[in-house]
Length: 483
Image (cartoon, rainbow, N blue to C red; front, side):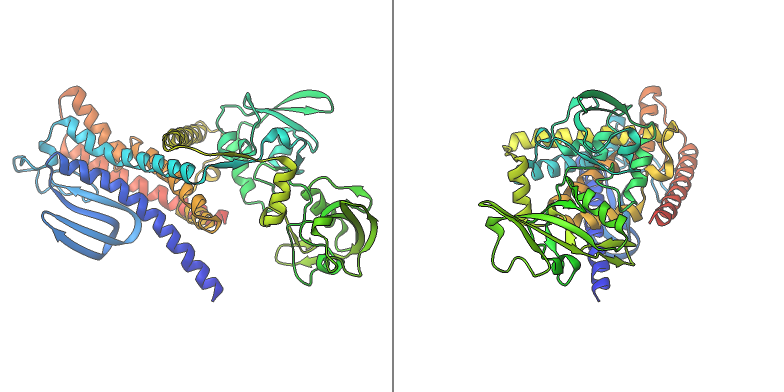
């Protein structure tokens, strides 16, 4: 039952995202066509078969059962329907073909423009409502680098202090996110290591490597860098950690006598022992201590005015599903207590935005995402990155969208905004059957003062549709292989 509910919930969130994007895109075509006096025969969200349809005036409004797109059928325009019945007759004043070329260009471009506007307002709304809360990078100091990760291959090592990324000062940790790492043609990371400054160069196929890393559950933050200290965010009931006496807010100091600085160092030690008993030493602040916060399995080593230090041994349990040894603890990001401890340790920066500042931030976010998508396409076309690893289809979109919905409304709508930018860019590409293909013919007409023949446009539309269907089939098959 839980699995069924999860599938239904994920499906509904994906359908919501697609419906919003398609509706806004087609609304752009619809409103501008109406404004210029064109007759709109059909406004459809989704493709046939039809679930619901009703006519108001000259337009039939339709909801289709195939939620992978939509269309606006304008009289006198060659579109996905390949309707040419009107060709032999003289143009009517309400037809697309009867309007000046500049008006037709506006109508064709409006879907893309509306998707961009939607993304701007979503990004701006998130910034205005939530502001920005982050831990300044300069307060973090050393970082943990997972072995065999993208960061490790670049040359980063545990204990490094990151100074710059792509020539910009390292101010916040989201600069190590995928979108920031692909912003420059060649990734550069400047670090301080043992009193020396070093500049590290990223691989030319950084997008391919990051994409592969997403499918690796053991990779930290995709690139493989973290700053999380070994704070216990939660303890699973009846787990080895629970029996040992660990509690939320405890900080691991050492394992088998080895000092522990990062959460991932702790998990790595646990895996190395392969289920053998492991001796832990941890600190508990007096503010978190009660008479029931330690069990008989733990020994009190030191008791001061501010904290107590405990020591004890436990044998991690083996989880067949994850193929890992687990102590039964969760990292500090999932607990309000330990999140506050992180803020107290590293400091926190809070930024509030006025409506105007949020709008400018929305514009900047759209520009950054546009630049990153264009760079990704350029890398794929030039062969620097693999096509099958760099692009995702409907299955991957569904996976990312449902995960975003689980993370909260702000994350979900941020993904919708990114998808809206992506839809705009893909639609404006000069490929027949897309808005960009129609725009290409209109620009040709504007320059030469001649319309391409109906036969040329029909053949181009058919070829474009075949190519798009083939590409979509490739993406779906590739998504399934990557799951």
